[in-house]
Length: 117
Image (cartoon, rainbow, N blue to C red):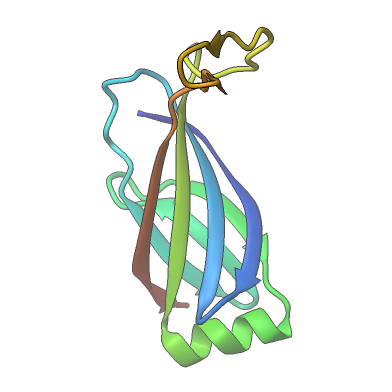
């Protein structure tokens, strides 16, 4: 199940692009089905499963024009798990590669339709 959803950045590329950080409760949780909507100038991400509002942000005029023009938005999601992803304090280099180890992250990019209220 989704713990928290945070909209980290909203910008315009070819269409409206929304960067989202999603924290899950457990590594085996896979219940994240976003539904996008716009009411006035508020862009809202809600759960398609139960209808609860996960995150919202106010859009400026240029961002509103882009979402109205395309009737969709690109979601760039970074999934993280509580207790599994945190601050890596000690970097242990891999001697053979000359590279440092990094924490595993799962990223997801999709284009979703937007409903208007």
